[in-house]
Structure formats: structure tokens, C-alpha cells
Image (cartoon, rainbow, N blue to C red; front, side):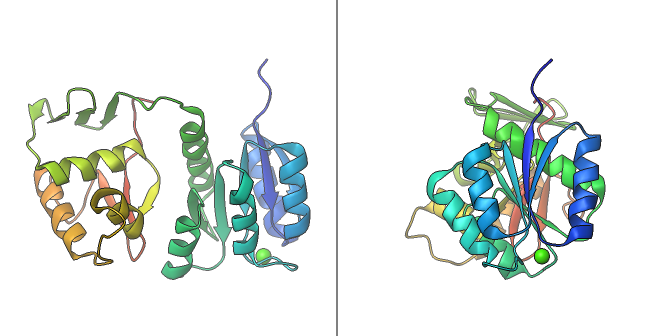
Length: 231
Ligand code: CA
């Protein structure tokens, strides 16, 4: 029998804590809870969890401080679980090193799907050579993209954008993270160029670009591509 995946939950609200713990125990995860930032940081160091769920509104410290301190020494996947649905807070959390963000209240499946995605990315040393979802297939080695078996032609930038998302399938990437990655550190913080390229990609791969099946917009935050079915 393999050891259970260990999740550290840093959350001060008792009802929320109990709900998440029940949910995760049902899926076979081992849970440790902390109700303050300080306790959370200490447990993260002593218990070496496989993943951290972090609430940003904690009684003793700002959740962002907890995130920054954790990221100072650990690559553990961190998912923010917050009652705040503000785009700026999501962007700040993701750009500060959080792997994902879930807003309360959430559907049980939403949280567990994000957890599986974050764990998969932290485990896979070598990225998968093939991205496959519905009728879209990207072969990173051959640099080829097929939709319904027909090859799709993308520009260099479009290809880089799509593969960046596909390498991070299931996770949201912020506009800034994408701009920095594709256009470098001197990229203007101007999403227009990104939007234009994304619109072109969608015209080529989505049946109905207004209702995308592959590349989803997280309004004010960034983009997320559909989970890789190829593992
Ligand atoms: Ca709280």
C-alpha cells in the first residue's frame, strides 16, 4: 500500500476547516490542520506535506506573508483557498508563487480537481511529450498541433503561447507570468498583444471562440488550458 498524500490545511474558520478535512479524507488524503499562520509555517517545516491549502485571512499574520515565507524555502504546491473573489488578490497570490486559487464557496469537485492537478505538476519531473484533450493534440517533440486529426498552423508566438499553457495544463497562468515568459522581462505590462494572439489561437482551435472548450479566460487574472488527458 502506498503512503497517503499528506495535505496541510492552514485555515482559521472551524466550519470551513471541518468541511475541507471531511472532503479530503473521503478522497484518501491525510490531513493536518493549522489555525494560525505561525502554526502553519511550523507544521510545513516539520511535517513536509505534499501540498498546502492556505487561507489568506488568518488571525495572526497576513496569508501573503505565509505564502512568501513558505516560498522562501519550499517548492511544495500551494493552493490558496480564500473567501475573497477579487482579481487583484488572485493575481498577487499567483505571482507570489501560489500554484492555484480556489474561491469560497466552492464545489467539492472543484477543490479536489485543483489538488490533483497541482500534485501531478509537482511530481512529473519530465513534462509529458504529448498534450491531448478532447480533439486537440500537441506533440511537443515534433512541434505539431492537430485538431480532429488535421494539422493546425500557428505562428511562432501562438505556438509558444499554446505550449506554455499546455505544459501547465489545468493551472491558471497570470497575464504577467505569460507576458514575462514569452516576451521576456522587458515585456510591456500590456495585455493587448496577448489578447490578440489568444484570439487568433482560438479562431484556429475552438469551434466557437466565444465558448471555448480548450483555452479558458479567468477574467482579470489570466488563462487556463483544459486538463491534459494524456496524464
Ligand atoms: Ca479565514
